[in-house]
Length: 245
Picture 1: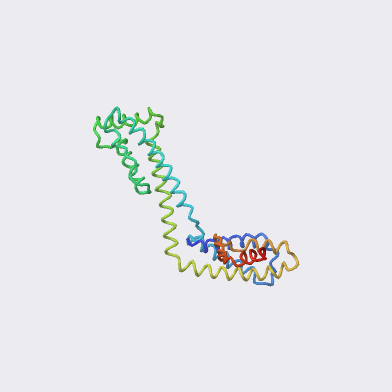
Picture 2: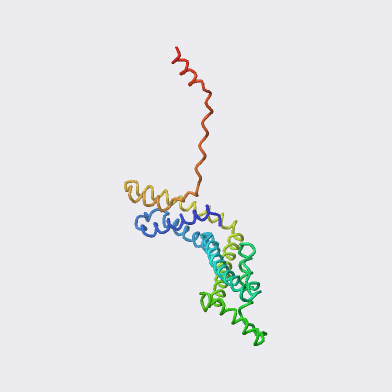
């Protein structure tokens, strides 16, 4: 979701908290209660449309993939070392060719295929897979390494699915969200006018409202200061002339 819209939604949420906390300050003769009700409905629709969702799931997914890649790397290192005693052992446990989510997940599934028995495996194959697991356990990895890998893959899939659902909601609701934000901004502006009048002689309360209802500014980068114009040497020349006279 666009960061500017998320910041607007944050402002709506804080404004509503302030209004509910200070509802007794809203004059009964004003339309303040109606504006609060309108903003509450708008905010609920924005939440349901996914407009308030920050892109934390992407970060979470990346962290899970990094952790999985670290485990795969440890297993590959053990496999390469053990390859000296059992040539070809490391072939079943290659490192990801490139670090990207798809390659890491593909490699994890290759590892599991070499370690997890299937219904069609014969007794010799089941025993061989158990022996491979034991190699890693003998070199300080957990006896639950297979279950751990499976759990990591499941967690990544869950986070990925949540992110895709959130992204799809945002894409499908863009026009609706833009209209709701405009309506919400209008209700907040009406409330701002009321509170500025109500708190004209109460600077502390007015400051609290302004703090609650303001929209955060997005990150900005300091502009590069303009370079000083190149020296023509005129001043220095004049100073030198003065000292020789």
